[in-house]
Length: 412
Image (cartoon, rainbow, N blue to C red; front, side):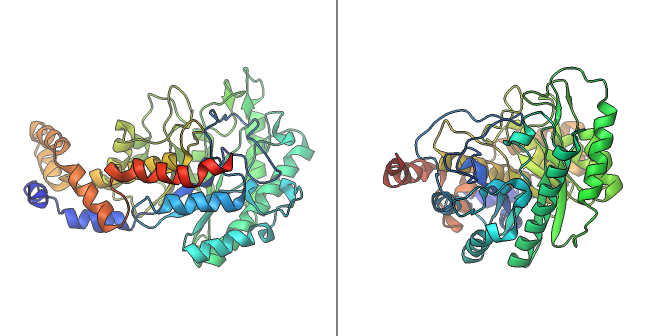
């Protein structure tokens, strides 16, 4: 079968699609490797903040060395050149506890060296959860000035660390900010907490870094455990804040109602912002951070990115954590599924479909969309993997399980 000719017959250049996809980096979520534990202290586990990790599959990374070992293995399974998304709790703290308002670039020097050695640029996140001063449900929007100022200082320091990584890698580093603040039951003074949050953010961002070095993103959420009735940092709040303050909006696929389309938001946001951050996740009934798969929702998102010409305007990060399966396999499936969705979008016969649409021939548009679904995409994906010198899907299971037998089972 001449796969390229099949695509050429509907007006698609497969080689051009490969070339475009090759330039799209994903930022891998470090927290998939150790169940969002971090390295502030030995045996740390995620506690609070409206998120929860389930499962206890063997082989979890217990140290920075093991986490890097697993990341290096994972990058070898994903076609293309990609990034790392690092949370503040993953510093190298020398065996002593360093509180969040004391984190500093020196705690990430070994990550900077690893980043250079492996040519993996780093993005960064403040960690405003899993801490005694977040147990009350409020961080940056707290009416307690001691709590609020603690978290303001933490985020300021995280932006400084982000600039440190930008300098280390000679290019942009994205700092993303998400907080768990919200109410379990109906609040009376929601306005007051949102006013406090806006003022706290203004103080944090009063120190400006060049955008080509530090890209500040703010991430909304619909609800979480303990914040079922109201989230202070809602989509509307951060949309308004990002537009009026010149910040980047982060859209997490799991942070909206399950019947709400994140894909639909892209063309709207691009009317008012020149870039955005997307967190690739899969909600199951709620924001449960399941491993991304080649779902209709992910395909719709990828299609809209390509149709809007937004691939070069978007930053794509993975954001899931599953402790019930092999963690390297989870990383690989999530990343490869995202790349598959993007490749499928790049292989759409867009020009032909657009001609039908503008001529009012909606039947022709629909027929071509349906034909594209049965094209021999899998053969092209295998070829893309082979060109990139990573395993094809058929060999992925054996490769991951071999690493489990040789490395992960020895971790006890």
